[in-house]
Amino acid sequence: MKAVDKDWPELPYAAWKDTYATLHLWTQIVGKVRLAHNPWLNHSWQVTLYVTPHGLTTAAIPRGERAFELAFDFMDHLLLIHTSDRPTRRIRLEPKSVADFYGELMATLRELDLAVELNTMPCEIAQPTPFELDRAHASYDSEYAQRFGRVIWQSHRVLERFRSGFIGKASPVHFFWGSFDLAVTRFSGRRAPLHPGGVPHLPRRVAQEAYSHEVSSAGFWPGNADIDASFYAYAYPEPEGFRSARVAPKAARFEPTLGEFVLPYASVREARDPDAALLEFLQATYAAAADRARWDRAALECDIGQPGIPRTL
Image 1 (cartoon, rainbow, N blue to C red):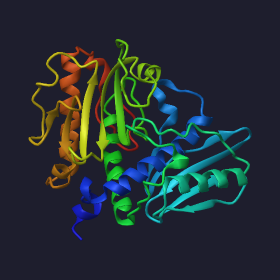
Image 2 (tube, rainbow, N blue to C red):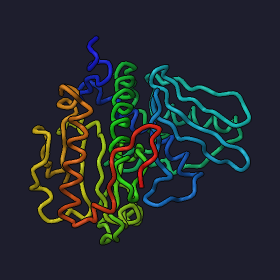
Image 3 (cartoon, helix red, strand yellow):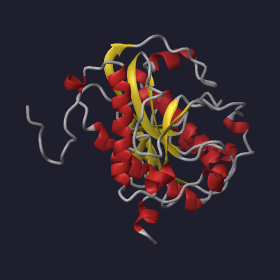
Image 4 (cartoon, one colour):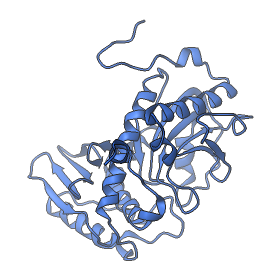
């Protein structure tokens, strides 16, 4: 196997779309468990999942004096339920319906005295079915689940490098289960106009709180039937001239249907230096947004961080 196939594997939407759809809903169930326990943070940061070497995790969730964690392991194909006071429980990741996955997880949490009530209607999905009734989505291709895990790990690694070059307010690199994308966001520090909302099955007040301040955001999205897996970048509010900006690499383009710049994942994995190609896109699209919105770049930016070396003041 070539290094690029191992580290940046192929991930064509058509090849794993059924697994993708099922996994999207499984992550929503797990994410809603975190949402039910964690106090609200700015921009909904309390709901996200975090990338691990094997997949995605909620990190520690408080439950009174106890704590627990739900972690997707796409290498060993398990959902791991760690608690602060009991042995780890495991749920197999294998072809099973969303309803069965939901029922199995809720039953296991009850056995661990961690019962929770959720809003079982999926978010940010058109024409959703409540989790407990969804038997249509029941696919799990272990090979593509592993590939997805590797892709988000490699993407996370480069996004973290990009994040280190900003000393203004910036989000963690984290995974939003509603939209099923990995994201990192930079903030100018200025308030933004109220977001108009319009995201399927997402309350307008959530979108307005999430976009309360000017942002330049970027990340990775596995795609859909019209747009294959891609890296993306957008600004809110979108400054005049942003969508007509010329950005690198050559394969990058503005996608009007999304209101975002996109860089096909395939072009990154096939590049001579995938890290450099992705960093070029991230920096170019950020600069296009920051310059046109007149951010104070000199006050907000710094050199890319180096391991073990404090920044020079």
